[in-house]
Image (cartoon, rainbow, N blue to C red; front, side, top):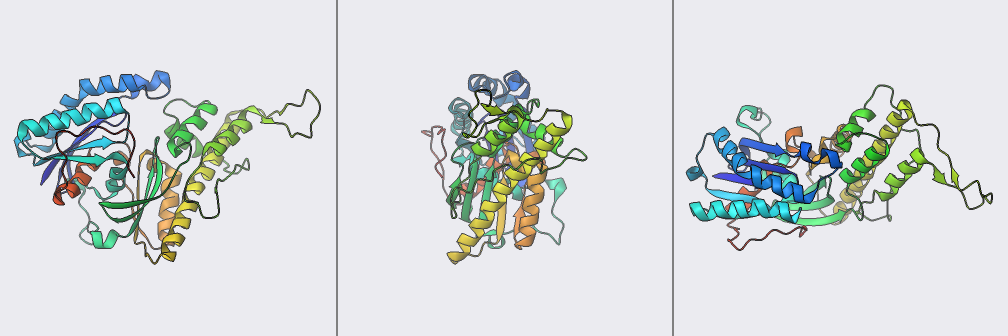
Length: 368
């Protein structure tokens, strides 16, 4: 079965042709980096206009790259939630038009859930070694799922690809958002997250220059919080409020050490250590809690833009190895928003006979 996936949830216009849910024949992504760079963040109105201009050529490019025609596509999958509503509207309407014109089925896909699928995709010229076949559902499930991106930080228990239970999510900033804000505090250019990661990897960087907080929320909580960590970095850079015991009028704050390149590098590394530990802590809790429910987790599925982060990838690999879990971690090209994951997960819905109709509307928030 050939599916054409379409993704326009934020600032990436993407299309992909996927065969049988795992083999990516094409993946075309038109980035809007140059549009939003001057604003240091995504401007929703500009994003939706760019999607309007780019969707048709991106779809044409995906079909050409795959070597197939529109008539050969068996179904159309589209990311219909969550995201910027104006951006989603372009992709959803485009997919509906194609489904109507070709009389092919339409599949609605949750963008966040699709990130969990990205780790099992492959390309024809990157086939699995014969002794390392693509994982079957029996091998993968039950699984823990982790999505870490600029808009979402969520933890799931998956019984299969269509049955997810959300165990926890951020109560304030998403991890990617915290990375970008800390990068701004440190004076790093846009996009902040990747630049902070590169700085933290600099030779000689110390990841223990400050005692940054690690949010636990409660002894059993599986939710995340990064706002306190972000504020702690702000105090390290700009100075902290003085202790109430200080009565002098000139002691309203404690001045920080002078900021130089070395301190900026070390603060980046220290923030990254704390942020990644917040993730692995909650994964460890989730494994303990699912085991207490009599559930033996077999694998860890991770996706989203922050899974491109070098330290987080290493921490996830270490955790999976220590707990004897199979780790499905996407290659860097599929960590960011893409349509291959939409087409791949869309195949699962199509195989189960779960289709949308032409009344499909975009939903800016996720349902799970």
